[in-house]
Image (cartoon, rainbow, N blue to C red; front, top):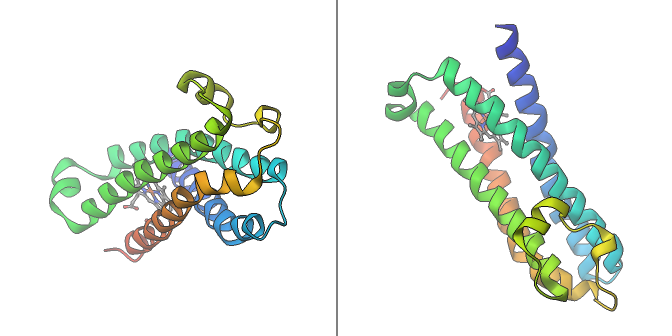
Length: 168
Ligand code: HEM
C-alpha cells in the first residue's frame, strides 16, 4: 500500500513537471524565439532542458504507471472498461508525446549536419554542440511543429488524468 502511494505521488509529480514544462515552452519560449528576443544559445538551452525532463520523467512515468496497472488493473478491467481504455490512452499519448519531443530536438541538433542516434541519445543537444552561425529562426522552424503537437498531447493527457480522477 505504501509503495502504491509512493508510485502515485511520483507519477503525479512527474506528470505535472513534464506536461507543465512542455506547455510553458510553447506558451513562453516559442513566442520569444519567434519575435527574435531569444538568441540561439538561450533557445537551445531551454529545449535541451525540456529534453532532459522528458527523459527523466520518461523513466519514472512508465515505471510507476506500469506498477499501478499491475496492482490495480486486472486484464479485463484494463481491456474491457472505459477506465481501462483511459489508462491505455494515457500510455499511448505518453509514447506519442515522448517521440515528438525527441524527434523535434533531434531535428534541431541535426541543423549543422548528420548526428548519430547513439550520440544524440547520450548527449541530447547541449549548448556546446550548437554549430556557430546558426540563427534562432532556423532552430525554431525545425522544432516548432513537434512542440505544438506535444502541447496538444499534454492537454489530452491532463484531460485523461482528470477523467481518471473523477472516477470514470
Ligand atoms: C507510461 C505512461 C503511463 C502509464 C502506464 C500510466 C498509468 C497510469 C495509471 C495506471 C494510473 C492510475 C489510474 C487509477 O487511479 O485508477 C495513472 C494515474 C495518473 N496518471 Fe498516468 N500513466 C502514464 C503516463 C502519464 C502521463 C504522461 C501523465 C501526464 C499528465 C499522467 C498523469 C496521471 C495522473 C495525474 C494520474 C492520477 C489520476 C487519478 O487521480 O486517478 N500519466 N496513470
